[in-house]
Image 1 (cartoon, one colour):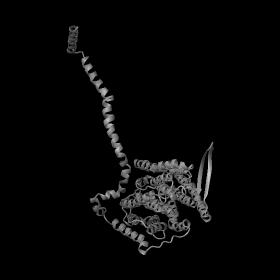
Image 2 (cartoon, one colour):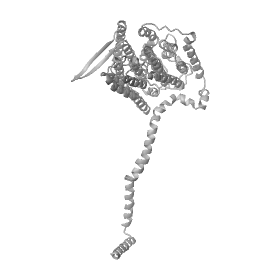
Image 3 (cartoon, helix red, strand yellow):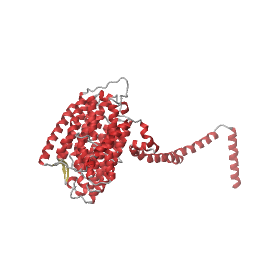
Image 4 (tube, helix red, strand yellow):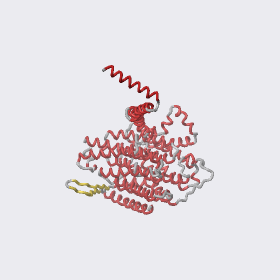
Length: 573
């Protein structure tokens, strides 16, 4: 089943690629309406929008999912229900495709909800308590976005159709569109894990690694970014975009800091995804949807490759994910190390790899616009942090001594995994340059002063140096100052967001319900109902039991008592 799915998806990827070239050459947009049911005066219509953007995105989704399924053939070979896993992945991919090609809010909701539901099934795939907790956090965070889309569907009914693309331009200043825009931004923030909904993204690492590669590159987390790219014309001058800019920059900054404290290999890569999502959202809120889309596609390639390399390493290390046990792996698994290094360097934006083309363009656009100092510093500092945690990861995995055990067996000859990784390696190197020709009809020529042009380079060098210095420090030497002010825990635990979105939300209600249970259910209501009645009856029954014992004294006492009562009655009368 793996090979059939791989060839099917790979064929669709190639087909979308050729269609996309044809659409760009001829400046085509196709809008299909398929009438499913016509009953009295009610039409139920399925709409499909095909333009260069949807075709290009579909090509990338199909390519990455085909490679991930091919990779799963080896990675999940001990799995008894491999067919079930492949079917879940395929349903996941087709939910994403439905979202990509929909100009209609109803079909967007189907794809959006499908992603949320199937991501829950995949996160809880390995059934244990940690997975269940992560799955609930993921699905409940995404439900907020689903509710927002449902409310958008209700509000956009005012215009008589759910095909939102007809209204984006000429209904821009309408108050209904103001409400719709707020809800769309809110929904995108939940799906793309911006602050304050960031905690579900690292928790979703409980899923199998091939799923993580798919989720974090081109499907679930990019759905929010893609939705905002489609709604960009409506949102461009709205207040919510300015708010989104601040929140996305803080997300990028927070994820960069937390990744430097993390020792779980998959969580470091998940936090790097969070950081890149913040970058996409921030450039989108500045009004550059094409550049955000460009970075979304280049990021998809090297992030999927990064997760695949992590999966191979975890497999070979007997399912250990802690990077402190690793080290010197480039001596034992050179081909996997090659893929890991190139994808990591592409993430840092090293010149002429795919990440460089989009990241450098984003930062030059930021330098070109007149923003305040906070935005400027957060952008560049976050870029420095990216290089920081990447270099720290490389030192722990590649350069330090091997720390696991005396007898080990590291091999680099799983050709199914390697072949799938090499496809993405090829794309990670080349996709930036060829996408630049496709997406931008003319090259951006950005003139800046020399120091501003080299600012990215300066911050990257600082990040690299700090990564090297801190990797050679003992853990507490850096944190002594931070521990004094309790800052270290704050930075380490994603600004307490996982605690706030789990225990933080439920603590008050659980505490209050315990108080009610203790004082009402087990307190006063017991005294005046079950336990109270039982106590009274018990006391009376004990009294009657003593009275009815064959004791001469009691009979004599009762006889005298009755005589006295009769005597009193006689006297009164």
